[in-house]
Length: 269
Image (tube, rainbow, N blue to C red; front, side):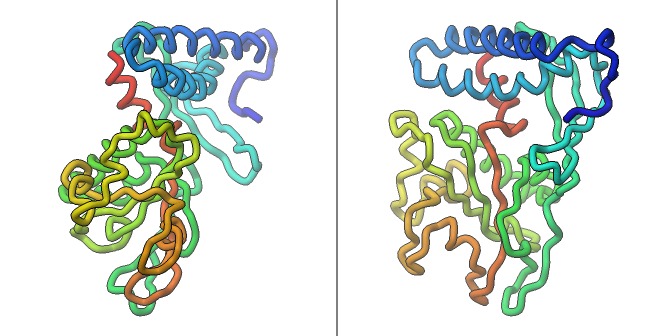
């Protein structure tokens, strides 16, 4: 359900037309991608899928005549909360005048909590969805952390190019430790094309030295077992190593994340 738009049919374009516009915009951007990536055909399908999801939201607002900078409220599918999207026209970078989407959600990353036996405050137990923009606001408050975040974005972008849709973020980066050594991440292998996966993500030699040198942190498939605990990494990440208590981690839907989409848009120019 969409609120904040004019209710009169004369003031908006029917949704069926908006959908057609969305598909048309996606097709042109997909064609642009194909021209740029002609030698890597599997990427065309992945990029087309991402742009379709991205433009399906923005095309409606453009078709309905939203002005640049206007904020509109969207109820999420569960009806549990309101998402606000701010639209800004961008016609200077790509051959189409489509829209950049910025997310502001009422369900922000939860505050850190103390945990007996842990040297630093940690996230409360559970898996907490967040965007990379939200992670930057919450955790990118000094130079070291911003450097690590930049590496995380590089790694996430490389995973998206192979078809990965989600990563889970852990490590001292998502604690109250002021200067974290690195970050730990695991990625969902569902939908990943091994032919497009950078070999660095399966190189665990020398304590994941190549991953740390390139991205500043470590990436593991979420479903493989951590040898010391016997748990899959997705579960292993949710145990605080000093106390053994439960702690939270962050889930990022990288396939549709605004930061990743901006990076990919820049790369295909």
